[in-house]
Length: 333
Image (spheres, helix red, strand yellow):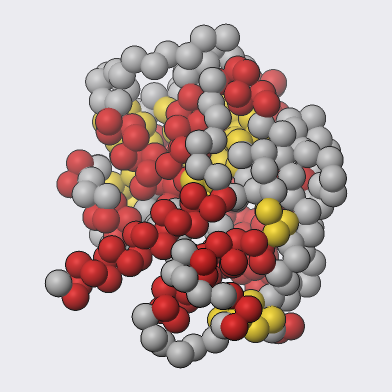
C-alpha cells in the first residue's frame, strides 16, 4: 500500500460540512496541497462560514448549497463540480442533541451518506468517498482498546446513525467496487469546537473564571473516559486514507484515554486555578445513556498510513486555552 504525498492541482475535493471544525481544517490542508476545494452547506447564501474566516481561507473556497438528505440536491452538486474526492463530514454532530433530535440525526447521517454513495454510483464510480465515522459506534469498550475489528454496540441515536452509515459505505465498497472508506475517529478537539461540546465549554469557562467572571461551571458525569486528540492532525489522517491504493477503514486516535475530570483539571491548571473550587456536578446534565470507557488501538493507521497523533490531551487543552487568551488580549489591545 502506497501513500501519494504529492500535491496535485488537478484534483477537486468536495467537503460536505465545510463550515464545521473538521471541515475547516480539512479545507485548509487540501488548499495547501493544491486542491480546488468546494464546500457545501444547506444554504450557502446565508451561512456565515465563520471557521473558514478564522483560518483566513474563506475567499479560496467555492461554496454550494446542498441538502444532504435530498438525493436530487446531492446529485446536482456532484454533477456540477465533478469532484475527484468527497469528504462527508456533514450531519448532526452532537451525541447529546441526538437524544432530542433522533430523526434529524438519523436522516442527516445515514440517509445523507447513502445519497452520496448512490450519487457516485449513478454519476462516476471513480469518485473517492471518505465518510466520517465515530468511536461512539463501539459503545463502552472497557479495558479493551477498540480497533477496526471490534464489534459495534452503539448507545445513542448518533452512534446508531454513524454505525448505519459505516455499513452503508462497506456495502457499496464490496458490492460496486467503489473507493469508499470510513475513518473511525475518536474525540478530537481544537479552538474551532462550538461551545455545545463539553471540551470547549470547559475551556471557555475556565478562561472566563480566570478573568474574574465569578461563575461556576456546571458539568455532568466527570468519570467518563475518552481519547482526546488534536483536530488538525486528524484531518491529515482523512486525506491519507484517500491516497492509498485500496480503500480501507481506520481507527484514528491517540491511543491514550483520560477521565473527563483530568481534562477539567488540565484546563484549570492552564489558567492557574484549582478546578474543584469552581466546578459543580449537575445531575440534570447526565445523558440517558453514556459511555464510561472509550479506548482505542490506532496501530493500523500507524503501520499502513504512517500516521500518528502528535499532541497528547494536556497539549490539546493548553493549545485551546492559549487561543482563547490570545484572542482576548488582541481585543483588549
